[in-house]
Image 1: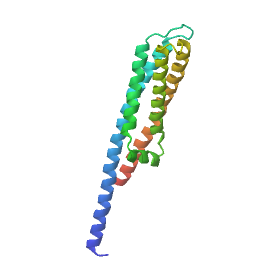
Image 2: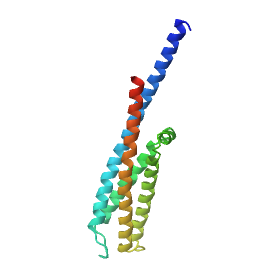
Image 3: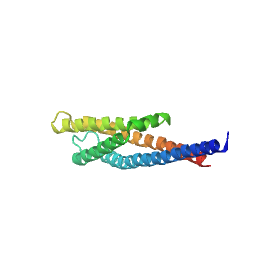
Image 4: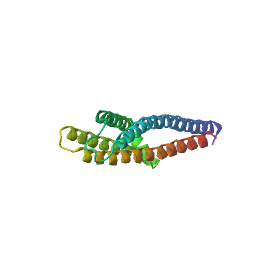
Length: 171
């Protein structure tokens, strides 16, 4: 190999590493957006959890139905943002990094919030009594809390993976 070919090869390798580093930076930025959505969702889920647990089963009524519905709508909105943010490219990236569960958690939260909104509507139409609604709210708020906790670790792992990959390429 002459010097021109070696120089070309070194430029090619350098350009390849630069593309990987820049792509990793964009992916870290994307994951931070998902992390932000989870933070907003987590706060709303915690507030929903507190609202639900303020009530006692057997009272025959629920306090603050409107605030409960407001929190459920906020959680659904953030879950939708999460799903909208995850494009097909990022779905494949999540699979490669073995953290596709992030997408599934957003889907599950969306399904749960839609069910809760249906239960609240049924309760307002007197098709579901307060005790049954309370049980559904308790179960759903517990599930949403678990999902919010389960969301954090995979995002942290993905960011660490990308940082280690970038650092190893830079060094």
